[in-house]
Amino acid sequence: MPVKIRLARHGAKKKPFYRIVAADGRSPRDGRFLENLGTYDPLKDPAQVVLKAERVQYWIDQGAIPTDTVKSILKREGVSTRS
Image 1 (tube, rainbow, N blue to C red):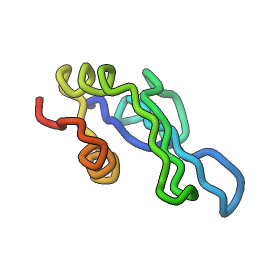
Image 2: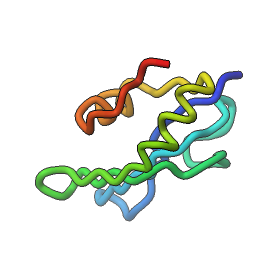
Image 3: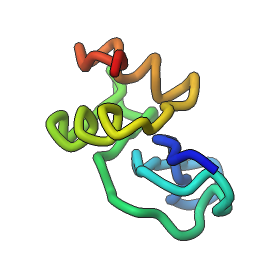
Image 4: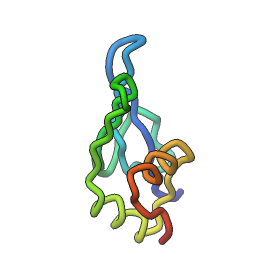
């Protein structure tokens, strides 16, 4: 199964906070991950994104596939999703 770059949900009920992680595609959403690549806080206005851009690019170059949501976040932050 390929490595995916996806969101892992944290925070309290109705107050989501997400970590952007590189994880094996078989592991559960909030389960084991390979590396923490940043955070996404949708409750701030505008939404706050903190990324380790060079590590995101490394994982994409290694063949990791970002989910649709993460792909839109990366595009907004100016990180290329092309390998």
